[in-house]
Image (tube, rainbow, N blue to C red; front, side):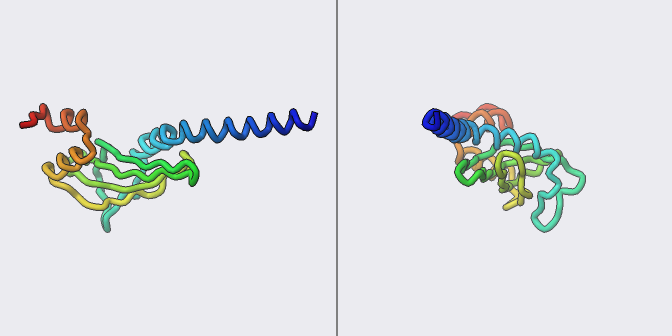
Length: 132
């Protein structure tokens, strides 16, 4: 009887670890995108006062063993200003303040997207792309 309970407990813990490893990236990304409009802490010494910024593309490194996801984000304000931001999501439930690392010109934003091979985003925000 004790052995059956121990085996069941071990299997349940193993199943939880497997599920967490498989879904952590998706859950933390979904939380970041959901929390993004309400994150008022975006700053680079000053706030983007009166502007809403939308996430255009993000590159993420998930670390489910530490329950942390580090995001590098390309965003655009409603006024058309591009910027790069960094942030963290902990335990797929809490977003740390996002910090603007630098503002970008349109050409720099296009290069940023190209660096991550974000083809769909390039086409969506810059039109058809021809490679010579």
